[in-house]
Every structure is written in C-alpha cells, then in structure tokens.
Length: 189
Image (cartoon, rainbow, N blue to C red; front, side):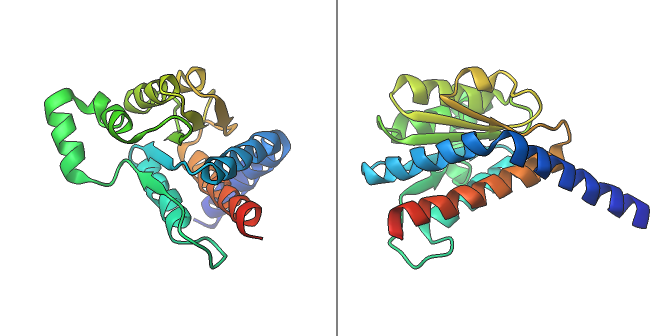
C-alpha cells in the first residue's frame, strides 16, 4: 500500500506541475472574466455530473458564502443541486437537457456559465454551454484529457493535461480555489 500511495501522490504532483507550467494564462483569464462578471452585476452558473457536480456545488458555495475574506455575497448557482428540477427535466425532456433547460430559465447575457467535465464530452454540459454562448453568456469549460467536444463551444477552455479522472478532479478543485481567491482579491482588497 505504501508504494501505491507514493505513486498516487507523485501522479498528483506531476499533474499539478503541468497545470502550473501550461495553464497560468487560462486560470488568470478565468479569474479576470469572473470578477468582471460580478462587477457588471451578473451571476455565475456552474454545472457538472458526478464528482464534477460536487465541484460545481463547492464552487458556488465559495462564491455565495465566502472563500477567505469577509465580504458581501456574490451570485452563483450550481445547476446540479435541485432534485425536483433535475428529475422533472430528466423525465420530461431527457437527461441531456437537465442543464440547458436551467440555462434557458436562468442565464442572462453577460453571465458566466462554467461547465466542468473530466472527459470534455458530457452531452448535457455541452448542450447547456452552447445555449449559454448563443445567449451572450461568457462560457468556460473546466475540462480534462484533450478537452473533448466541449472545448469547441466554450469561449475559454481550461484543459487539465491528464487522462486520469481523479487527478483531473484534483486539479479542477485547485483551479476553482485559485480563481475564488483571485476574484475576492480583485473585488474586495
């Protein structure tokens, strides 16, 4: 077990080092866009499936509550949280529409819509991001592997350079935390 633990920790470090080498401009751009979104009076909508749904909820919580600073609440909604909405849309329109239907109801031009997908190929996330972009929203993908088909519908794609889902998810949450920190500093320092 010690060898397995050591191997996994080394894998984590390797991915995080690659994020540092390759993704700093995209992380910076995401933070700048999100701070500007809030400055303009717009909101954040964020979505994902499975572990990425949990990450979307985590992201929204850090934005609405606080990250490190005592500050006013900022508007953010995780689209994976309302079981009544998810099950109604899934039943009536299909699972591929659970996020796009919410984007249709909630997104306004100038909002930021973030889709999280380790594969980059989550159909429901892609469909929602495409609709958000058509509605004049800022669209961001937190992706893995090669970015999949989602990278083609986003204004900004942050693609973690890994094929290992746990490592991608670890990088996504680190990026989310960095963005939250940068946004708070930009808006409230």
